Structures are given as structure tokens and as C-alpha cells.
Image 1 (cartoon, rainbow, N blue to C red):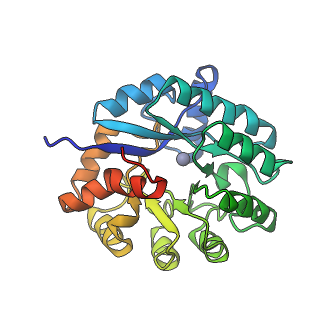
Image 2 (image 1 turned 90 degrees about the horizontal axis):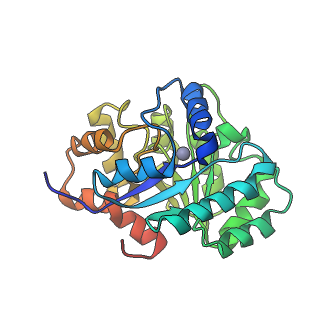
Length: 267
Ligand SMILES: [Zn+2]
């Protein structure tokens, strides 16, 4: 099989002590059995099996008092594993967002991951707006969990209103722009020039033709490949991705080209 240069642009890691519990909690929330345990060594083992060279790693603070601890943990993991590319966590209820963002930058983190469903806020909630302004001012992208057919915290139409309101904010809408909300993702996010997408946690559910139509409709140049580790197995996700009828140019773009463009680097 041909080998590709791959960036896993959506992976979760947890401190070893809580990896088991955190992984189980996510599995319960989505009612999906987790493929793996979310620790760094396991991520590297699974990813390297398919040729992943860089991993965008993140973890979510479900409460404001967890923010600093998690950001320090992500930084420490990036020091230990040069393959890691760390994203910070934040929370709209966190008291001094500007200060923590500056600390995250000083720690070498490259963006912010938000999970509105775990953090229980609407993407377009008024209390979240100062956070977006502060993040955009520092030219950091936000990786948003998007979509849930049981709640509307992270609904694509809410992300649309933020993307319109902050045209200088780079947004990455995970899960093809809306987990189990794919028609809404197409309807609202197609025209947003500042919204990218990732492939994670979607290919097991999206019929192949629908995935191909969305990829072509949004454009491969707006897509990143992501595993959502520990949810899915890298080898299986790669197989699902390669089953899509895409050109080699499109594949290379999604595997690493879009990532390189957003972060101005070469993998
Ligand atoms: Zn995620």
C-alpha cells in the first residue's frame, strides 16, 4: 500500500491516572465503544502504524478550574513527544482568559480546542464572545467540536454566526462540520471562508457518497484528517478514508496540506 505523510489533526490525550475514566465517560456520552485508552504512548503506537508524523493533541476542561492544569499537561506532553502539536483548553466561565491564553502561547500551544457539549455552552452564547475576541487577537485557530443530534450547543448554525461575526477567527469545525448534523453543516458552513473541517468521527456513519459530496462541496482544501483518538482506530479510519474516491492530490491535501497551510509549517 502507498504510504502517506499524515497529520492526525484531532486526537485526545489524558493524564495516565484518569485516562481510563475519561475514556469511559466519552464512550458513555456518545454511546460508542472506545477503540483505545487515551494515553500518549497508545496514541503514538496506533498513529505510527499508519505513518502519522504529527498529532494535534487536546483535552477538554469541563469546569473552569481544570483549565490551567490541562494546559500544563498538554505542554508537558508536547515536551516529551516532539510529534505532538498542542492545543489549549479554555472555558467561557474561566476568570482571566487573556492571561491564560498568553500563558498557553508562552507554553508553545498552537490553538484552542472547545467542546461546547461537554462544556455546556452554546457556541454563540454572549458570554463566549470575549473569549473568541481574545483568541482571534492572538491569531490562534479554534478547533470546535460541532454537532450533536440530541442537543444544540454546538449546532452548525451557531458556529456560522460566530464565523460571520469574527471573520479573522480561523475555525476548524470537527466531524465534517457537525456530528450527526451533516445536512445542517452543508447548509450553514459551506460559504464560510474562515471555517475548515476535519474528517474525524464521521466516516463510520456517513454513507460513502454523502462523504464524497461533502468533501467536494466544501473542497478538499478545507479538510484535515483526524482520528478522534481514542474513539477510533487509526488503521480503520485510514481504510475508511481511502475508500472514498478522491484523487491523490486531494488525499495529500487532507492528510497534511491543509494543516501546513493553517499553521504555516512543513510536516
Ligand atoms: Zn475532540
